[in-house]
Image (cartoon, rainbow, N blue to C red; front, side, top):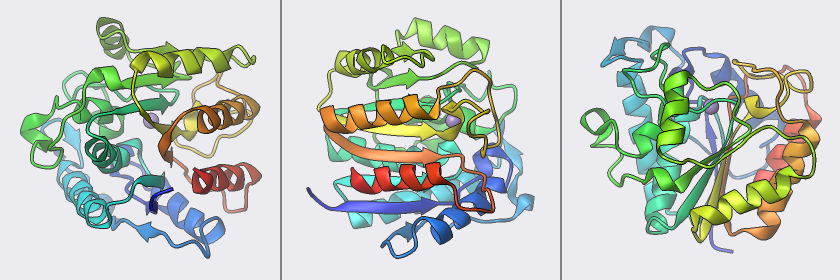
Length: 275
Ligand SMILES: [Mn+2]
């Protein structure tokens, strides 16, 4: 079993909207009460969002990521379940587990978006569209002191992506990144399974952005994209992965809060606690 760490990560600056900060406070209140979790320190000040090196909020983002790294390194868990925040907030936990398993880690990015922009090519300059590029070391000048063990592009795949920027699509093709597109039939299960196997790694991490879901079914996140995966399909995919692969991490990102208890959030948090 090993020791599992449960993290609440209200880091939101990568998306430029503080709704995710309050969303995570809501998760703590409604879904994590009674669990022993660690909250990563995050500022709630909009005034922190100063653009530097083509990244909005760079200084505060760097500070918070560094804080997350030291917390997880100190705790040295074997498994991590995180609820966040803007997708870039997941960088320390993926990077930590990659090091923990000596690079033997496949990362599924279950997300409507690619999150694989460079700072130059990003039209928004929001860091939540860039975390994978940071993890593979493309921001060495900016994050090299924080992300010390860079990953390989061949460790990543996407499920449910449908709103990629043109340069992201180019990057996907150039690097042959496995991309399982939206399919709400059971045929998606072997597609996801085959794509994971093609990465040829012994441990699996699932990073899930809630915006992978069809917005008509669930839309408590900042950046909806139409024609998404149904709730039923996402749950089938998640259970298939848990039951068939050696899962060492799950993260649930971009929750912007609902002001009420949601059955799906309850289910997804239970899932995270169960890995
Ligand atoms: Mn995302």
